[in-house]
Length: 320
Image (cartoon, rainbow, N blue to C red):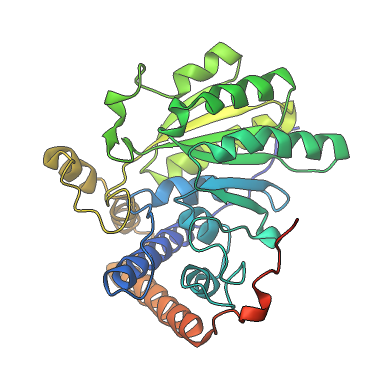
């Protein structure tokens, strides 16, 4: 049965992208000031996260990677608790134990954030198999990058999901960079989606900087996984406009390529589109930005006020 997707206000998508950008810029500023540990950001990739996550149902589960802030915030995570987690504070989602790179939020269906390249790919079939065997609703959504697609576990994961008919939506955020190596130096094919065909997995490649295109493609993909119970691969072409890790001067990046992608900033693309078609005024756009700035200020206040974990809790959540 075809799923009827709710109408989503594009201004809400814009607000989510603005929030993700503002949150990660706050992390960058905090890192430069020495108040926050260095981290991996997804600046420039906001449309990929927002478009896919808004196509999911409440019962769907997410496994993600080291650039996870966009997925978490789009899923409804509180920026204050995320910031507290990054700062190692008790008020964070994992009590300050995970930092920015290992956050799990059970109540949002975020099973894990993996810093091991492709680690989430190795676990996605197991999570999907568990839900299928238990008769639980929902699909499993696995976010990974083009670097992980060049790992052996990518092929192992797709092969197993296809063989066992597992409801996994694989989402490759192809941001063109595998740490400090351009994808053209590491990939034998132009698109990651090309590799899915050898496992009999349907796939699509989409403009990852157009949030409305990503949303539409993700709705089609999630519906197909839900109705068929089989895997699907969605490749979203985007670009990581900041470095691999903060701080990073991006000395290895081609300036012309970076400029071309900056001109296609996903936030600017949607904002300009909404103003051009009369859906939003320039002042309305500014009000959204102000609203987001207020939320980030509140997040800072919450995180700063949250205490560090007590030493007595050092062995909590540690298993022999």
